[in-house]
Structure formats: C-alpha cells, structure tokens
Image 1: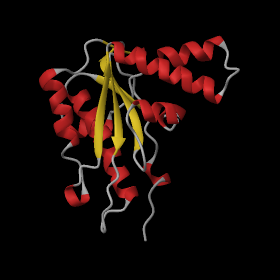
Image 2 (image 1 turned 180 degrees about the vertical axis):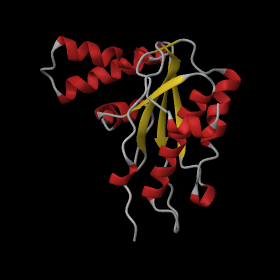
Image 3 (image 1 turned 90 degrees about the horizontal axis):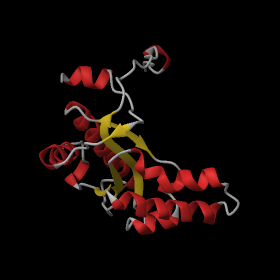
Length: 184
C-alpha cells in the first residue's frame, strides 16, 4: 500500500473479526511504533495485549468501574461495559510511560505514545487489517488503570482495537484544509 494513500484514506473500522495481526504481522506493528519521533529516544510507552479470555477479564473490570462510577447503571450499560473489548479479536492498550527528563517534558512523551498508537494502526492497515483507536472514561478509571498496571503520571493513551474489517471501507469526507491553516 502506498504511504500517501494510506494516510489520505485512513478510516476507523468499528466492526472487526478474526484474524487480528499475529506473529510477524504483529511484530511489524511494534517495529512501526518504535520508529515514531521520540525526542531523547526514551520510548515512553508500553503495550498491553488484550486478547482471548483477557478481553472478558478486562470487560469485567470495566463493568466494575461502571458500577463504581454509576451504581444505577441500567442493564444495557452494564452489558455494554462487560462486552466492550469483544468488538475486536485483539485490543492493544497503549500506555505512556513518563520519564523524568530535563529536556523532554511529559506532554511531549505523551505525544510520542500517541504517535506510537497511530503508527501501529497504520501498520495494521498497510498489512490488510483494520483498527479503531478508542479512549473514553475507562482509560482514566482507577480500576482499569490498576488492572493494566498503570500508575503515577503514566496514562492509557488509548485502546487500539485490531482485526479484519467486516465491511468494505467507506469514504470519509475530507474537510477543506483552509479552515485549519493560517500563515504567520
């Protein structure tokens, strides 16, 4: 796949089935992440693979987080939380790992972790897979953070859902760049 075609036609794929990237294909995603701009070569991120029964276990944590935040959540919301991670065969939690550094502030390290997530998604698409990057309230909930071993300044940058797209990609309208660009 041509790099410009990939960047200009990227879309999120909310419905994903098996197979997901595995083996060499999955390693390619990690290698793409390791090549993102990274001031100080800190590699301020780590990845937690959530697959198989792990999706159900983390779904139980998400449901508990929901009930802690909203004890009156209805059955539909409880069920959604429980099955949230089953929308794809592989979910990668991308976690920024902030390091104390005199020249690289925390926000720059978080951006690098975000770039790693984006590179992984693009590498997946380039190999014929699909993905969607989600965050939401579970990414900051203490129960979910604890379950994934996230503490201190570290943050869950997002959950990258990966698999094979169920339907053909649709064209997303392109905004006019004039609304986002100015000259100084």
